[in-house]
Length: 319
Image (tube, rainbow, N blue to C red; front, top):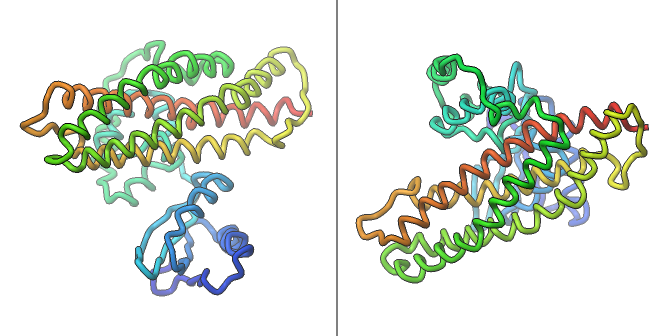
């Protein structure tokens, strides 16, 4: 891979507005795995990040080299396809490995398509130490809740709705109340609580718009694919062309929700309570941590198990 000094720079400021994103996509598509280019812009190109994630998937690395106020430089690197099993695949086979990855600060849900070697290189983690901890997990027969990889796709989709979507809808009102209250009462002494409350509103809005799309469009189509396979039938191509399109959108929204929760964790210093934390403060942080853990498993089931299998299933049953 080229050093920063030899990487080409694309000056976006001199490109006609309607051609900016198509040009960037053209440059990205020409990259080989491990290669990169830098975009020069006069504002934060974050919308491009989400468009690239939505249309190409989680196949790139986004690094800010300079962040304003007048000049923005972002290095976009195309990831080399993972060699061996990915982080998501390892967790799909044994969910206990999720705790090891969390201990090392590795995202196994939204970032689950990367290999262990890739994430270790990106985060400066000792790969040998990580792999030793993964191997040191005791041999055990996985329980029912660790065998999602063997479930029928229709059943797994229903499980996600009935367990995780239900949990989110029940947890949001209480967490909104808690985060708003502690920001109001303790915000003067702990201004980070004001930011935490804002990030939680963003998470709530994202998920409340996100879940109905899965329940009304994506999951019914996955169940239709599942039924067609069981009955030996073929089905017509859907209006959205391929399941890859809504999956890319769902993964982009997962990433956005994950970013908001990561910001909450950083602002709270890993949910560390101050000495003057009242009962509501304690409950708020405990529930936020619980919410984060549930969302990690929720997104893992979709990104690393349901979606990849649905993509393969669609290839089998489309006419």
